[in-house]
Length: 440
Ligand code: PMP
Image 1 (tube, rainbow, N blue to C red):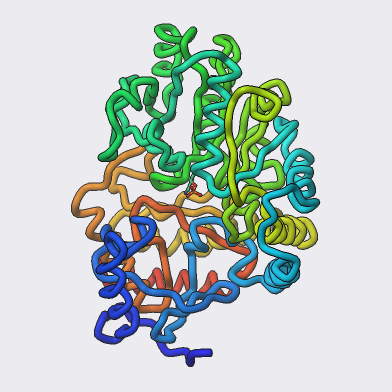
Image 2: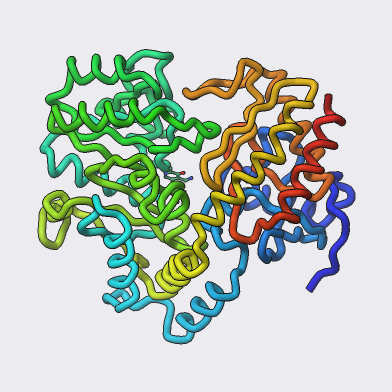
């Protein structure tokens, strides 16, 4: 085990991370296997993590950081929770993957079905991207329609037809927001603004008979945290029902985080299909999608809609997911996480209020976001000005210097876990208070 040293952002004081990054850049595009890890939005070189435990990560130079990224959502129990590690270790000894069914995948599927009333059947996959991609295929097969509606600022993984940028404020034809995605691939995608019933109604008025599904993060958490008005989400439920389209809740972040029944339970809205990831895999690669039997029956081998995966439902990933869901139940996790979130809010609000420039806290359960928008926290995907982005970058590095690891982007939400206790919250708030004063 490496010895702990105070955190610092200065690359010369993190020589092992700097060296690893240099090596990585030679053999991995941009030096990272997922773009947001690269610190491009905040400057500097990424930390390379050597190990993690509870609420902390330790970089390759042996420095400790209090972590509010949580691997972007899966680690609701904290890093290397002993119960999860024990379950995975035990499963490993019985083989990593069989390419044949095993009991653990039935158990995980039963848990999802029991927790989420809209899901009668579920299929397990290995990532959120796969879950969403497959749910959309099922929606198209089930409705025999082609169009998919998404919302500007919502991220649903990197399937071609969902990598579509926003139109500005009005219903718009999808245009790819990534290289390598032909216009033709997104010709069946429509993008709407969040928080706008009229735009949705207008689109349905025009093309309702061709719309297979509307997909939304019920608590959008990929362009900052943009909690929606319930009335807006209810309107989407009504519109889709009236027009025979399916409503898909992408609960990859919110599922089993905002509560046992995810955002659907929290909002009191039943979608037709739902997608999961992150928490249900407890840190291993797991995703899932499910819904009513009549939709899921389209999937092969019963139906004609193909979907498959070499490592889907493997016993090691299932063990991590099951152990995580078990401990969430056992430890009354959702109640505790909400209380922790509320406590953080109480501590943070006066600190943010005292800052000499606008910073707003947005919190939903154990998700929180510091919005640097001078005009106030937005409810739709809103770009930050160069000055606002620069303030966030300065804050990010000031926090890193104080041993606090925030997501390296002003548009990313922070995650609390069961490992974040009162001491961790206090450390965060003190560091934030100092950092805000420093960068002002
Ligand atoms: N949907 C949502 C809401 C997500 O937040 C993400 C990932 N952050 C995905 C889908 C894609 O999941 P994955 O990265 O596991 O492919």
